[in-house]
Image (cartoon, rainbow, N blue to C red; front, side):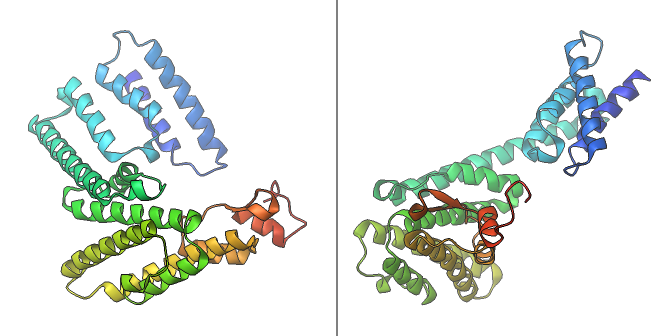
Amino acid sequence: MKIILRKRMLNLLRVSGLAFPGEIVMEEAKAFSAVYLKNLLENSGDTYKRSFLKEVEYALIYEWSRTFIRWEASNFIQIYELDKQRLTDNRILELAKLDFNILQFRYKLEMKELSSWWENSGISKLVATRERTMEYLLCVVFATDKLELSRSRIAMTKITCIVTLLDDIFDDYATLEQLKCIINAISQGWDVSIIKDIPNNLKICIEFVFKTIHELTSDATKKQGRDMMPFLTKAWADYIEAFFEEARWKTTGYFPTYNEYTMFAEKCVSLGPILDERLHGKIASAISCYMGDNRHCSEKRQ
């Protein structure tokens, strides 16, 4: 009976992680089950199986709804090694280990390829941009962890790095006229020859971006069996327009309305709070823009 109770408490803790904000009953269930399981760990002695205690420890550290599937796989491999009686066929455990090791090796190859790609570009020596290649790869792995999606992970990581680079260039380096020139070059099929009268370091960065986009588009075209350039050019042009609008707001000291802010935020998910230097460091966010349109509202009421 106690074994069933302990397992039910563990399941209760896990399911409580799926609660929506304000679900008081689920919050209470989470608090109650967590206290019970922590007490179980502290006073376990040799009473309970080590495999179950490890499962409890993992659940207390990593909320079920927010865990990373490959970390969870590694944890359960250790759990099943402690209690092989859970399996009717131990070859399943060996297959799980093999699968985990193959994926780990693939991830390492992807890390090596992406590190070389960024290092060889020399971008970090040209501009002060955020270098977050490994961080972005980890985020992509979180969403697409399967072996056969390796090229997709690399492509998505490169795209995210390029977005960050362009964001930094638009924010800190290029003038509005130079940004217009870059947007025009993108709209006209990524024609780098259009870009003139910009510093050499920025031009090298833009050439790197254009080259990477051409390579990724070529791979996508081969995979899809149709020309993907028009579609991707339109998508990027819309995205860059949002960057340009953000840069224009910062340069001119314009404080956008809520509708303007959200319209461009839909195109550019990285559109974060905008620093308005003319307003002595005031930050423009979705909330502050809404409050600007509705003077009777306070942030607390939102």
